Image (cartoon, helix red, strand yellow):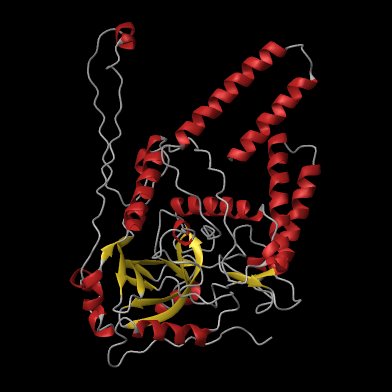
Length: 474
């Protein structure tokens, strides 16, 4: 149950208590006190490390249309959706014409924290695959049952989780153990790394991971996979000779498959339009240019109608009805946003995902922002891109389905293109074009080439990938 729903149901309980008058009032107040105490306890647990929630992103794209589904990715989906719902609470004034002509994305509102759920793991060995898990049971002879019942040491259990926090790579040599081609592709790399500083975001990322692991371990919930605990080799702040800022992230690549744009892609497959998981939004968006409706609106309208029918069903519980009312309002706000705005399309547009707490940071000149230009390096290829979406603040290494398929044609929303930490994400903070608009692939390539020249350029025989427009002709 979300924090907002908890508050709403509590308010409903108080209202019903007032309507019933004084009769039975004492019992109701006792029950209400117990209920509020329980809620307070859950909130306290929640603050043992719930990470900041994420804006628009995966459902779990996160998930839903995302690479390699797993329990923690389903958790990401829930968190991203909560963030999206918070975003939709606001009127889409920017889309109606009040857009900041500087092109800055709309201010984000942190969503309410997600209430910690007590785990339901039936077998502790299922807490997370990828972690060596040993269990040991010790039975021995005891005294009488009444004596052992009173002995605190007669029946005990201990759950110990050991996790080593990784150290960041800081040298070209360390990174070239992952990709030996880096210096040949980027001949100015050694000079650039002379200014290398470990980004505070590397430590923030791992603090967020540990907070999440701590929270879930305390409640016997499934915890992050070993794969996602160790998804970042380094985050560095670099400066070119002319002061050009570079944000270097070394990671893997998961797949994002979100986004929609009625102007450029007025039709989408029914399985996407009718999906309850696919997210039509990306952090990068702009005012619609045509009157062609977003194809996702039809599916969301059907979901509203389904909610209305279920709300009207006398067999629907009060709790379910309250949830449906909340969901219906959320869908309406989403439709309103899709009516005025367009977004990137992960299947067609090359973009990367950066944790939402970075793209919303206002006091760090090295923190990437939505729309900043970036170059993705894998093996001997360099791919121009933009920062297009915000992701969870405890996970890195994500890019659009278009990018993923360029690296590995077998990629799909459930199959990541790169598992090892061999992908370099080179972002140029502050480089975005304003205002935002439909992605121009040639413009992205040109700007990335210009920015690379400022840090030493490309090595002989290397070129930036050229993106072909795969969208159907309008």
